[in-house]
Length: 49
Image (cartoon, rainbow, N blue to C red; front, side, top):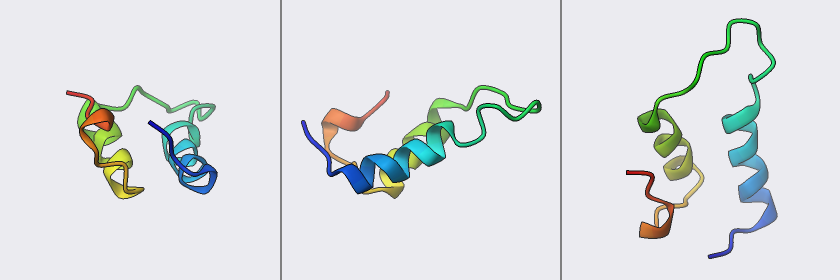
Protein backbone atom coordinates (compact mmCIF):
# COMPACT_ATOMS: atom_id res chain seq x y z
CA UNK A 1 0.00 0.00 0.00
CA UNK A 2 1.33 3.45 -0.83
CA UNK A 3 0.50 6.97 0.30
CA UNK A 4 1.63 10.31 -1.15
CA UNK A 5 4.48 12.06 0.62
CA UNK A 6 2.35 15.08 1.69
CA UNK A 7 -0.14 12.71 3.35
CA UNK A 8 2.63 10.87 5.16
CA UNK A 9 4.17 14.18 6.25
CA UNK A 10 0.84 15.33 7.72
CA UNK A 11 0.46 11.97 9.47
CA UNK A 12 4.01 12.15 10.83
CA UNK A 13 3.44 15.59 12.32
CA UNK A 14 0.39 14.33 14.20
CA UNK A 15 2.00 11.01 15.17
CA UNK A 16 5.41 12.30 16.35
CA UNK A 17 5.05 16.10 16.55
CA UNK A 18 4.98 16.26 20.35
CA UNK A 19 7.22 13.27 21.08
CA UNK A 20 9.95 15.38 22.72
CA UNK A 21 7.53 17.28 24.97
CA UNK A 22 8.31 16.44 28.61
CA UNK A 23 4.58 15.93 29.23
CA UNK A 24 4.28 13.42 26.35
CA UNK A 25 2.46 10.19 27.01
CA UNK A 26 1.76 7.36 24.58
CA UNK A 27 -1.35 8.00 22.49
CA UNK A 28 -4.26 5.62 22.50
CA UNK A 29 -5.00 3.38 19.54
CA UNK A 30 -8.20 5.37 19.01
CA UNK A 31 -6.21 8.60 18.80
CA UNK A 32 -3.76 7.10 16.30
CA UNK A 33 -6.63 5.67 14.23
CA UNK A 34 -8.15 9.15 14.21
CA UNK A 35 -4.93 10.55 12.78
CA UNK A 36 -4.95 7.96 10.01
CA UNK A 37 -8.60 8.68 9.24
CA UNK A 38 -8.02 12.45 9.28
CA UNK A 39 -5.41 12.25 6.51
CA UNK A 40 -7.62 9.99 4.42
CA UNK A 41 -5.94 6.65 5.09
CA UNK A 42 -9.17 4.72 5.55
CA UNK A 43 -8.54 1.55 3.57
CA UNK A 44 -8.70 -1.65 5.67
CA UNK A 45 -4.90 -1.86 5.36
CA UNK A 46 -4.64 1.19 7.65
CA UNK A 47 -6.89 -0.20 10.42
CA UNK A 48 -5.00 -0.54 13.71
CA UNK A 49 -7.56 -2.72 15.46
